[in-house]
Length: 387
Ligand code: FAS
Image 1 (cartoon, rainbow, N blue to C red):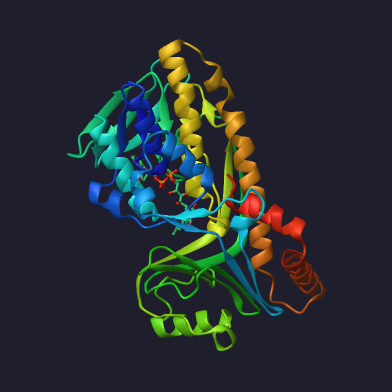
Image 2 (cartoon, rainbow, N blue to C red; image 1 turned 120 degrees about the vertical axis):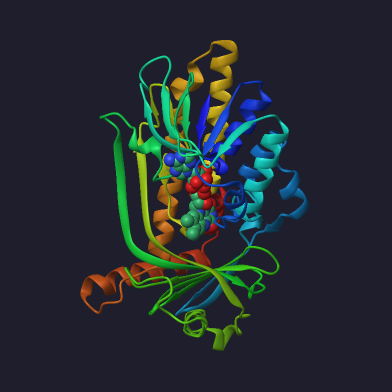
């Protein structure tokens, strides 16, 4: 079994396969230090925690993860909070930085005897319709490499070799939401005890705790502007303006240690299986960070594929592999639908034309329903935490 990519998808898949006695090698183009320190997601759904626990991969998050179950909306009509952990399925998130989870997964994979080749970039996947697909790779020393396996799992993200190697017939559904965020990681304690969503006429601002000393902020941003276009001072002032700091209290400032510009777009590849090649995680579909789903979907899909591969390779039962694509696409599209709804809730056009005014009035009505309707709040909680 060859797995491309050592992110959450590749390492959850690799861990479960090795634990089932299935020979598996992970090809990862980055070095170990980069893999262990790349900051991205941080909110794990309850189902994600259950999957990790089931496979003996939750020790770190059980010790250092923090339960989180409140979000706060700040809008032109005031502020309201939702204790989503007491709504819907009554499940909290667990806040645990993705780099810590990936580091735990990598350590566990190597402890279990898993093979990983750092600095090895997959260039293409060939003969996926045959019995022995081949991965053409550029080895760490620059030499060309060729890896043959019974199956290949493309866990190498949206720009990886797996997507580049899809045969004709693969369909890509794509949507550019027309919104850009400046993603920030601040060396500053959280300013709220909740996930903060600020909806403002100047644009969206978001606040998500990562640890007790690090907070992720998002600022709706001009498309095409470089991440370093604004001074730190100007960013903090704008965050405070949009989060209505004057009314609800100042933000706890600190040094920005990471900036990234994210154009909010989504895509889904269909089907997720092409012969002996399977797409998992961001390689299968990209989802905007508006609803904190990407890493959670990656873990779910990896676990579904691992069970299916184990049934096929150890018991000769191909049914799980035949059902993999349809089964995961159901989860992916439900997550995409909620993420799209969240983007509509948090962003609106700024124009004064009839269309913009109409859209913004819809947005305010949705927020009013969320503020006042218990059934709407249960629906929100179930989809916000669920995967
Ligand atoms: P990943 O991208 O994590 O991993 C792919 C791996 O493949 C990488 O290690 C890469 O180096 C390697 N690779 C790529 N090409 C290769 C090749 N050709 N050969 C070998 N290796 C190759 N999701 C959330 O749920 N919540 C959030 O709050 C959130 N915030 C985010 C913030 C930012 C700034 C970004 C960029 C993403 C965020 N995401 C969030 C989404 C993100 O966490 C992804 O969904 C998650 O990392 C997906 O995991 P993988 O599918 O494993 O892909």
